[in-house]
Amino acid sequence: MDKILVQGGRRLNGSVRISGAKNAALPILAAALLCDGTNTFTNVPDLKDIQSTLELLSHLGARCQMQDHTVQVDAAGLNNHEAPYDLVRKMRASILVLGPLVARLKRARVSLPGGCAIGARPINLHLRALALLGATIELSHGYVEASCAQLRGADIYFDVVTVTGTENIMMAAVLAEGTTILRNAACEPEIEALADVLNRMGASIRGAGTPEIVIEGVARLHPVTAQIIPDRIETGTFMAAAALTGGDVRILGADPTHVDAVIHKLRLTGAHIDVQDGTIHVQSNNGIGSVDVKTLPYPGFPTDMQAQFMVLMTVARGSCLISETIFENRFIHVGELRRMGADITVSGNAALIKGVAKLSGAPVMATDLRASASLILAGLIAENTTEINRVYHLDRGYESLESKFQQLGAVIRRVKA
Ligand code: EPZ
Image (cartoon, rainbow, N blue to C red; front, side, top):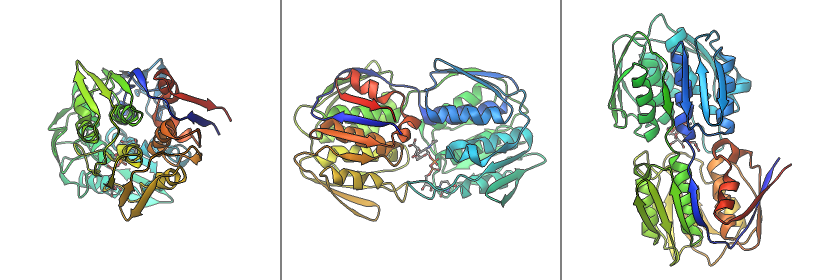
């Protein structure tokens, strides 16, 4: 397995361009299954999760190709309703093919996504909503089997805000007969991006990006060409890295309106952040102050930025509390940060972080995608060298992260296994 070595102590300087958003691309690629023609998507990030998705779509009968961040998916030949365990286990977001398969083929057999390092991550709300749309749902041998004669619009309330749940049901409802209302829907920018693409395909969706989404079913959709929005979590990761290292970084190609909460919290730590013409300029030269954070559904502070922000707090002046309200086990990175000298106490879903003067480099283990990024950030300021193992987690969600950091002056390199 590859590892990444980071030599601490460099201030980041220069500019970096943000890639397309993984969590926008995944549902939009799944939405291509709804069309019997060729969709073209640009600014698609080159990631393991994208490759896994294209492998799954091909298994279902679609013809996929990716060339320099442009993906074409021709789902005219969709002829297989089964997403097998050996493909789904690689990436739980494979569950996003469930809604489109039931809508297009009237049946689906999808392996249940297993557990995950950060939490149980059940899909009960996806299944309950699909049943409300008229699908018959059966669970057997680790698979969910869904079928219907025709999906019919329904009034659906999500007990918990679920991002892929909202996306899955939105995609199922666009071809249902009648009107569907999604209440307590997720409001993430990726939901709006998906609705924009579906509406351009001929769907009729109102309210995406708000807690109430209304979908009028249509008979069929047609293929389009669409651009993937920039990755707000990659944006936040580089903003945090600039603040952490006392650097001066311009972040290009991001959408500043998608990172309001992160900008607000970083400014409270003392970072100077200017937004002009789509460029986010982060400067930090007077240390880091402690700031409490609670993760919440969008537009709250994103759970996918919790680990990165925690690294800042480990060397901040004072103490702070970070509360993780979305996932029940998303403090796995704490143990690794402690090994680097951080002073963190965890109690339930809260972590108390007392700032220390410095972290020290050490061999550490990545455990999930965003925890991997946080360990790189810690390595950027730790004394001596930090060795991050199991970086395959990183490759799932960040495109050429180490070369982007190198461009900003970091001493970081990947050691091939
Ligand atoms: C999406 O995961 C993202 N993944 C995650 O990003 C992100 O952390 C998460 O949303 C929260 O923002 C993609 O978009 C591909 P949820 P998702 O359903 O949809 C509970 C990353 O690093 N829940 O919004 O799986 C669930 O257990 C990844 O890019 C149910 O109880 O998350 C969790 O506590 C990590 N039943 C909460 O809701 C359900 O049926 C939010 O989960 C569904 C969810």
